[in-house]
Image (tube, rainbow, N blue to C red; front, side, top):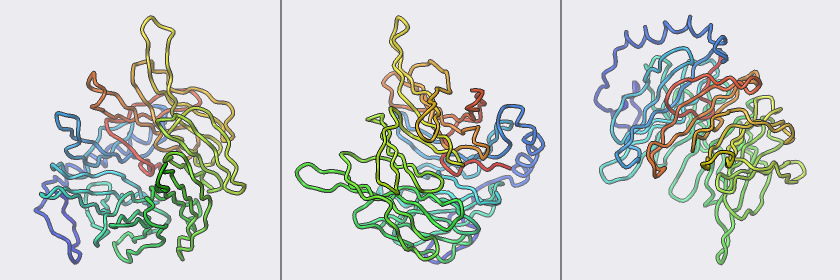
Length: 383
């Protein structure tokens, strides 16, 4: 179980977790010299925080924990292993001194509770940041000491803010109920936060109402970027400057570029899970490939990259193993490397999955293994 180092009103203090502080200190400090040379392996230097799941026999998740690794070092666990405890969605502070993450636990009555915690890169100074009657998920660390998150209450979701010391937790903006809010995204200058919210509307043939906002990070004042009705729920990936977005869905395997200034939609072809590079010039995405060139049919989902206008589409990963899928988690600052999650299935019925991470150079197609686990946006801290 997790053990906060600082008690907050209304929080339960759990039994101490056994960690060897000296072993962790030596294990994490020593790789720094090796990590400095990691560009030789094709990846920029830096640390990646990710989650590892422990599965039941039927493939359902029993628990998950946070880990830390580089392409040049072995993975080290940051949070303890405990059944029905779930740690994920790690997000680095700007200077790499803390990691905010989502912690969930299941009570004996089967109800889940989620809060935002933070921890340092040595696995020390664990601090619970949120409290209250809701569930608090998907942290995104912004400039300075402010963390954006989604607060899920009984009848509505809100975009919320909490400071790095756990103070001044408050709802910044709440879209109309019953809209569900996706993970918040900070603008590069830290002045705005972009959110996507949506819900079913209509009675005979329900449609999906998609709402995208630019929210003033100081005042909470919202500006509607788009309000449109779609036939089905879609994910929305914001461009770094917030001027555009990409609608996508894994089932339809189709992407649409939306210009928030004009409201115009443009097809970007087949694909899903798009991720914009930090300067907005490239988009990494996943596309289904059906291979009939061999006697036996093969199906896989490699990583592709294209320019921001949808031109110069090219395949990056070359694996031709059945049911392998590569999805982008985060671009490097240089706009050349992508941290990706690779999914494989462990059973013939394609229900039990295993994830591992790679860093891919999209120019050279060099693939560098990292570790088993799953990374999300905000997971890669580059030096």
